[in-house]
Image 1 (cartoon, rainbow, N blue to C red):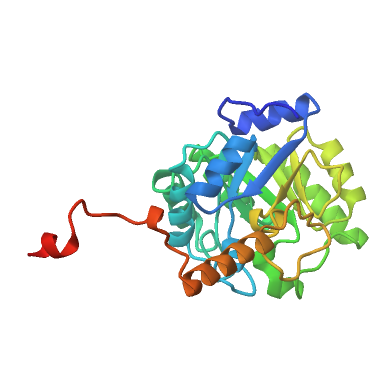
Image 2: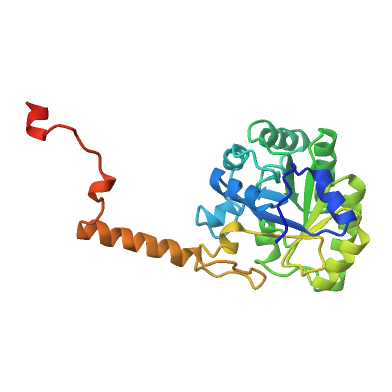
Length: 281
């Protein structure tokens, strides 16, 4: 197994990896211990995703996540001083209320959260916001295809780009986003043939999630990757562990030991050097 790169990753790092033909490995993280694990493993990019609304908060979609929550969780991740590039996901409503307000919100992710870049969903309609963020010296990760914040407009979590007109739109937006200056593009839930073509036509990296192996990198939600849940997961998720069973077993063993009186043991308890009656006299 290759040794993890011990240098701090930046937006430029990802571009160089694509130029060398090296794949990019990205994952979500929402807290200090997960960020430490991702860094130790050698992950290239950590996304503090609005997926936390579903993964941590139990919502049906990402729309209820607030900017304050993203800033807070970003600060937990950056407290670990991780080597991966840390990207804050701009939540729904944080970049829809005007250019100046959008830049202010992104600046909070950088100044308060410690993010090194931001991600926002959407193509052509978001170009003016993206230009303003880049003018403010904030690196931008774009996001095309299935954009979860548009779940109601899209009629659900559905694959995008299966029809010719939509595929052309996604392809055109990706090319124009590169011209704007974004450092990479997430492609979510699009046919792998389309993602492969976009990846070949761009000089910046593409990071796929449900977009096939032709992308320059991949991203998965941490809790899905490690098998922390038994809830429904899309077909593109690969579980690399079954930590839910492990943790459930640990909790059940704990309950059994508490109820049976074997926890805590004498060795797991503190002791006085004097007899208790003498001590309290």
